[in-house]
Image 1 (cartoon, rainbow, N blue to C red):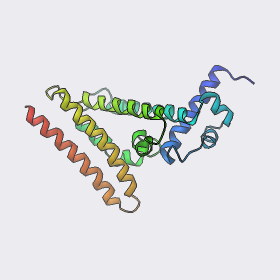
Image 2 (tube, rainbow, N blue to C red; image 1 turned 60 degrees about the vertical axis):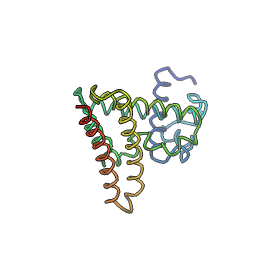
Image 3 (spheres, helix red, strand yellow; image 1 turned 180 degrees about the horizontal axis):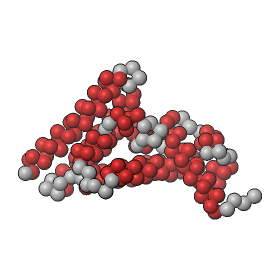
Image 4 (cartoon, rainbow, N blue to C red; image 1 turned 90 degrees about the vertical axis):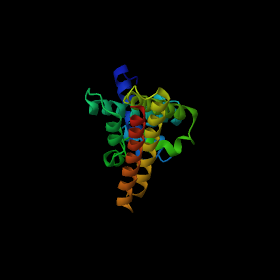
Length: 200
């Protein structure tokens, strides 16, 4: 039985949502297509009608999740010109660490993306560049473009690493988990302040 275009779009969206959430929670390699189809309330066949492979689904699910997070970030900014420090404080925080299923896909998947296919790597690289550009745009034009990019890249990498390590140790050493976030947040903030003072 053929489904309508609207129903097909709804099914595709359900699959992307389910895959995005499960991949962040259990890892790309820790989730099978049967798990995703079941979570979306669909069948194997329905999944393969939309995605030719798990790799293709993973790439699109990664982008789907990241775009959702970027929309949340824009909503958080609320039309104001959020500063670099505002972003650093928000991105490298206990709140972001604790949002495993709905948090940043880069943080959830960074350690395994290198073992995936090219499509997933491309999705990761695109997301990384988009987040870097957002942070670059929050820095003063008084800071030369190469330095803005360097600081933005360091902040994104710092976020990914800090959240990953904080998640890894929080069950056994919660105070260390918080210390990791604070140390990275303060170090990136100090580098930003030093660069800003140097340019004044």
